[in-house]
Length: 94
Image (cartoon, rainbow, N blue to C red; front, top):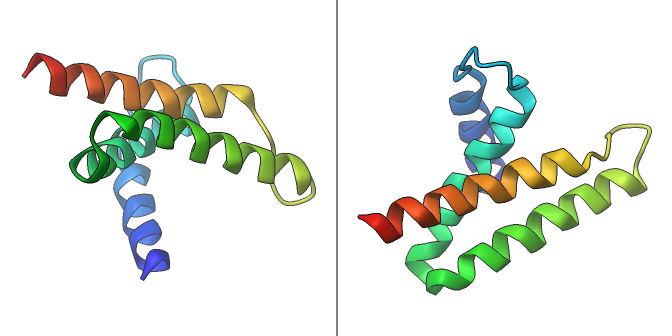
């Protein structure tokens, strides 16, 4: 089930690229953060921001522990967190 969800997210974000000077990888992390926050917000409310930050940090830690197949990047965590923060702002304003 989770594999199907991740495949769907990969397909959605692979087609989204905004030529604004921000790498496509960081745009994908931003979208993941926004969608994860949005889904978690309806379950746990504003605590979803902390959840997204922890999960993104755990993912980067996993990448750090497996350098042969992944690359750890602080800016990936930052892009994911910013996606959640922007979504929080949009929900708060609306």
